[in-house]
Length: 214
Image 1 (cartoon, rainbow, N blue to C red):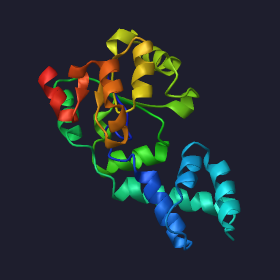
Image 2 (image 1 turned 90 degrees about the horizontal axis):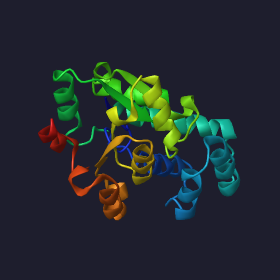
Image 3 (image 1 turned 90 degrees about the vertical axis):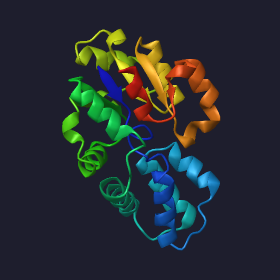
Image 4 (image 1 turned 120 degrees about the horizontal axis):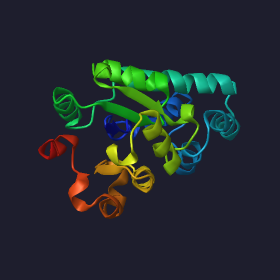
């Protein structure tokens, strides 16, 4: 079975949270976004980030109002603006036409994932969507991929993951999955690492280039 990551693999969305930070803080008259602020909110929960944001910038908004603003901005981006990655629709259509089962493994929030898939009219192509937070295992943990394989009734070797993150690719490989790296500019500085994990012939410049393997 073929499994796809969402953010940065199917969807060109890896920069969306920085865009949201820029838009949200800009509305509060704060420009530019401090680099250390982005570092903090990238690695912390919504709740902790909202507390930090309120205290750091002395905002009159409540922490819940901050979280709600972020969620509204994210919903708008996923539902109305974020494009598919180059070649994504072509590969999904090619796999669907061959009768292959296609699923998603993602750490994205369900309502954002659903909004993006609906926007691009690809939701019906997927057999299942596995959300890491609902399974309660991080994507960097190989056990997530072992669990997904069990849920699908598959041996890990029957699963192939397309992902842009070297950490998630390494975890899937450790779990016994086949893997294909997908280029995203966010991870260009780790391109050699991805090639060493996947093999240079399985590091794809875009998803449509995999069609030659079918």
